Image (cartoon, rainbow, N blue to C red; front, side, top):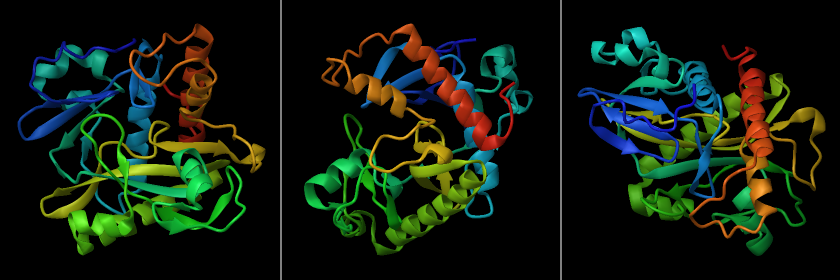
Length: 294
């Protein structure tokens, strides 16, 4: 079942994102992961089959796997445990939704990079650094960094987030919270990276969002999904070129190859791009979890 519109849920919209729609259930929130897809901060008219279920299931896996590092906002993905009024939408919600606790979100994207790619590569090629962190000279695309680095950005209500240095982050949210965000981001990345390597994957980079729940820092939203992370095939890794990836990089590369200025409206994606993108998401789930999506 393809889901692009979740307006069948007759509860107040807490936030409607590019891919996720969040509904206010009073003391809880319901996150519904649609099959919409975005790239370069623009949502496309196509839906990607199975994408919502893949993203939701991967987040569930990682929230459980990393709960010994830091708590999270997840309550359950079992629709039978949702409020009774939602039972009529069991088929629509099963596998693509998550009941979560309300969290006071911190307006920062916490990005960790272990390899040189994406916007980090572009910034390095211009300045030799990323978010004020100086890197060795002569590095190539997809090179492994000497150590994982924390490169935060501020959350934008519209348009692109703005990269900031760690010192600028301290000025915005204070030294204590900035240090905790950096420390937990790196701990999460390192644990997930070790798991990924055991599954034949390289976790090149990722981003987190954190919030405060009952006075404690927790990780929220999504975690280590193909929408928030770059996963590469370890057996085909070769620095100096784009890598075989299990994320949106295939779609980004396609979009870079066509005459689109990265502003709305987004072009309609050809069927073969939709199908290959779907397969990338399914393979990511299977490689990360060791299971088939059911």
